[in-house]
Image 1 (cartoon, helix red, strand yellow):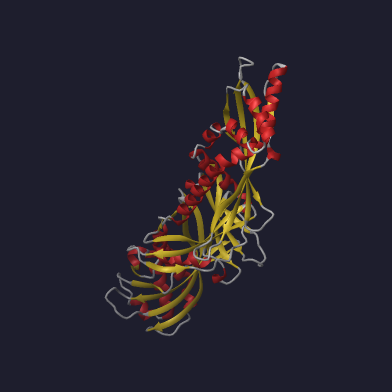
Image 2 (spheres, one colour):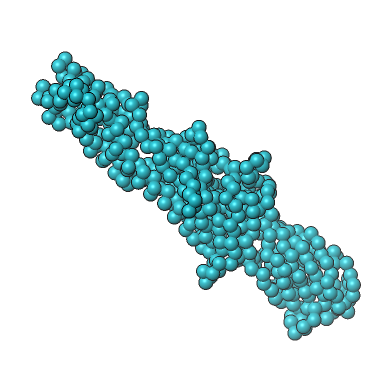
Amino acid sequence: MTNPWIVSLLLGATLVQANLYPPAVLNLGPEVIKKHLTQALENHDATAILQELPLLRGMQDKSGSIPILDSFVNTVLRYIIWMKVTSANILQLVVQPSTYDQELVVRIPLDMVAGLNTPLIKTIVEFQMSTEVQALIRVERSKNGPARLNLSDCSSNESTLRLSLLHKLSFVVNSLAKNVMNLLMPALPQIVKSHLCPVIQQAFDDMYEDFLRLTTAPIALSPGALEFDLLSPAIQDSNILFNLKAKLLDSQARVTNWFNGSATPLMETTPDRAPFSLTVRQDLVNAIVTTLIPQEELVILLRFVIPDVARQLQMDIKEINAEAANKLGPTQMLKIFTHSTPHIVLNEGGATAAQSVVLEVFPTNTDVRPFFSLGIEASYEAQFFIAENRLMLNFNNVSIERIKLMISDIKLFDPEVLKDTLTKILEYTLLPNENGKLRTGIPMSMPKALGYEKAMWSVSKVRARGTPMSTNRQHE
């Protein structure tokens, strides 16, 4: 069953140079770690392992090196026909920071009931066993390979062990049970360590590999794909961070752009205690947009597409040169060359896009020389949103920042007189064309794979170590 919590995709607005920190960072909070480690333990039948703990043999092994104690154990065990764990539960895991850097403490509480059969009584003698396994998650660095996360120092301490008789019976049976518990107290931590810790190690390794597979799964773009790969893992507070490099591929699976960056970790936390977040660097965001919206040339027969704007343009040209305006025929044509793809600028209020285009006006579709050519610097409102597990981007509200007259065959004029009409032309032609290329969005399989139904996006000024942290604004 999926969890309805909200997770975050963060788009990073840089405070430091782009190459000082990774292109992307996956930040997994303690809830995700606990949830997936618990599932991995279930997959490895950890509770079944607990129910098979060799309690009698463990007590014998513990006392074997001390002859006097060994004799006492044999005396007690003569009255026991069998002894085993009858029920076992793994309670809610705890993940918390260690006192050391790059280290997490994982505590796994265990609740068990053990039963023994003795000829002294017809019923089974039961007692409660509560203990805790503790392990450390560390970043381990290798001279010959990349760093990785490893689980180590798995142990069960006698100080966390609690034993109690569930039902008081006769004096003789109670005395026997008390002696058994006294023998079990020093033996059980080693029994648990020997049999459960290897399972915990396997469960952690599986969880870690699952996280890596999830992180490096290709993300389909239209066209091409985006792929992440691990630069280095890191630990911050109670969170696991995967510092990622990235590459963009074309439709033939050829690499078109690499983003390696640095392994310097970002000092980021998941916003508003979200279970996890994916922070994407601003230059990578722009490279993705460039992949989705390549440079192109649009040819528009203005009177057929937007006749009202065509008439308005003719009136504007008439103010400049009446003779030229009269030459505008039914096949009046515009050409728009996208000199650059939209450049996303992230800020705490959201996002905007800036783009440079060249616009040419031809009297008819048979003319090869334009009346005039204009260089236009425009900006748009860039709206990111989540829809059906896809990150969507849509442009709205064109604003022309600057117009430059490049070529004119009608006369020199101030292109600002055309600003309102040009804004409408871009609004009705260029934006729908680019929004059409963005309509498929970017699939976000990660939230669902981690068990969450909803996602949100946020713009955050990310920081490297030593750089001041700023707030972020989140959006559904």
